[in-house]
Length: 310
Ligand SMILES: Nc1ncnc2c1ncn2[C@@H]1O[C@H](COP(=O)(O)OP(=O)(O)O)[C@@H](O)[C@H]1O
Ligand SMILES: [Mg+2]
Image 1 (tube, protein in one colour):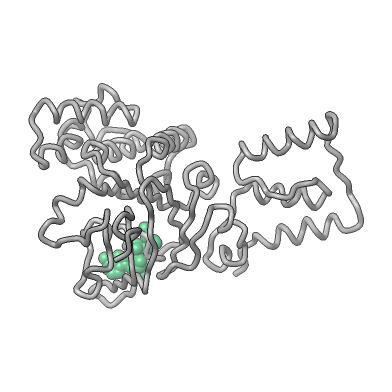
Image 2: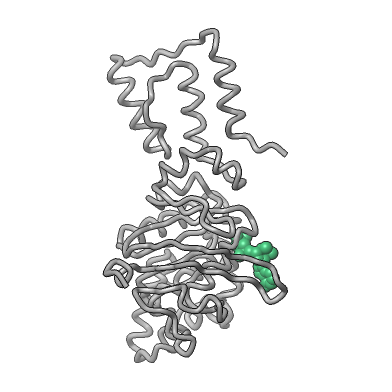
């Protein structure tokens, strides 16, 4: 085993998995995630994303897949699956799968109590975890009465209270209103800045640039793995996998067709504002765009490039 493999947060090598009914979900999946990295895991519906993260803490495994997954350098011991949440916390897509106690305090305290912490430490962890997800003082709230956004954040708190080094989240921003989505993205950014290793399953391509520096594209097997910029640059691969690139990137391609000078397409709104400011400053306060003979056909071809055809 190489030194790098020993230290990797997540090491997956030739992982295969078929459900008992024969459905093949994962085929020869291999990748490695280092400590402190933040990864977006993308792929079309049915690509095996959820199946993959259920393997990371031993919820799913098969004789064939044994040994294919190492977390913090160690294979998952089937007899010690209950200890995995200390190393890696998994936030399921549906918060109702994680909130099952009468009061939110009990849900967030559940993990630390199982880990055997004393009462004062359990209380401290619950308080701190709720604060970190913006639910300070929610201890005595009834979990299943919380709003959709609050439930998502509460589900994250149930994982944070075990203080795992790695956190994997299954579509954390799905089905949220814009305000709740923005709040959730801020929480994820906070975790990233703290140095947690994050693996975020998402279809929310516009959120990826601020959350992840690397993107893994899964479609039963790993079809792409690179920096966010590299992966978003490969439009053909993304289209083939049924995915898309951030809207701002598509928009700057259209600007390019109008002659806007731009070597590197911005991935996020922040990037775009910086880019525009620079161009305006260089042009002493003006941006010059032109309509020439080819503009319309270039705009159309850049639009077609991102279109999903049936
Ligand atoms: N419990 C199950 N039994 C049989 N097939 C399943 C089960 N769960 C998921 N699958 C199948 O496994 C494949 C991968 O599913 P999943 O991991 O949920 O994909 P994703 O999360 O990327 O949408 C799909 O074809 C899905 O229908
Ligand atoms: Mg899924």
